[in-house]
Length: 283
Image (cartoon, rainbow, N blue to C red):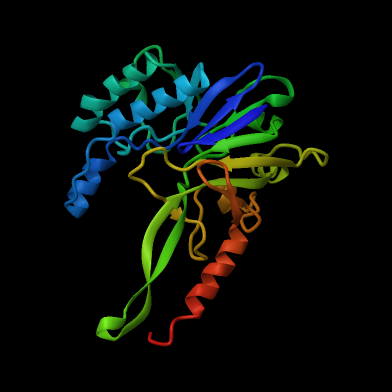
């Protein structure tokens, strides 16, 4: 099974699969940003369609899986949802076969979807066959038991990112070095998942010889969303897998959106703490 990371998405290709997996589109977040901050951004639906079309064509993909949070507002009955999402989803079906695993923002999403878009169970689905089966779910709920028969589970929900800082100085006015926040970069997380931890919470029998799987957490596919700073010790990941310690957070590997290994969360948090403690003398 070949796994490729590109443009905040994940591509899986093997004998039975040729799929693009993306998460957290949050269509309509532009309206919220505009209302709260007075900043206006172009609608992202056209850009998202173009990016999906590019990936589908480049890798000759047959299926698209969206692992949750197609829309941003939890409620459906707002003008944006009815004006944009049905046409957006129809455009997707003309590019690629599309399946949605609903997230916590996707209440009543079915009413906005064309008939040929499949809406899966909220607890996830299994794709692929044999030893190359992969589990997909959003991450805000417990996964369905059948996902525990896989060695790789892909989710979204937490919007992982790395916060950046830079040192600036103005010696001409007598100001020494000062650290300034320089934005966030979306990243992918690869975590060791304890399947028996999940089985205990679901009331299932534990299987000693089948306890470990890999949990891959994708960032938001919407370029307006950066996400939770995984390198900050104060950040908390969302969803029952993280909240019930079924994931080894500090040993979780951080990858760029192109799949480049950046370090573990524990290592990055140590560097973050050292940077904060070693403030320039001028401060």
